[in-house]
Image (cartoon, rainbow, N blue to C red; front, top):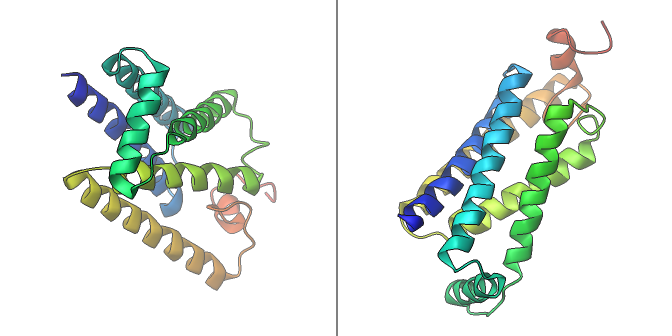
Length: 186
């Protein structure tokens, strides 16, 4: 039961993140409440994943480090437990974005450096956790979703480049914002 809960908590997290990215890349305008709740539910599932993992390993940080080192050695042949700290950073980034969503703080949204760093790091952890270290069909599903998101990103980037529309952020163009009535040029 514990192992099943552990796996489904992270699957829920990743599914919500994939939906959030796809929504942005497709240019769909969603109610900000829906976006906030997706970030929040994903964060709750992520924290649930961590708590389930700790419960599974006897609530011992040392046991978590040792388990991570064994898994890393199994996959890449190098005993390394630093991935635990990368997962903590993943949770911190997700949590900060969740708080930003609830505060409706648009200062960071307009800062493409934050958006690139956030999504770049989240995707790095997703690829490592759900493709490199995963077993079974989860690898294929995650790889397919990542390739699909990559295709959507390139399609969006080419479309915006073809239109010669200046980018406001990494995923939204200035033309799209004005078109939907949310740009400052109205």
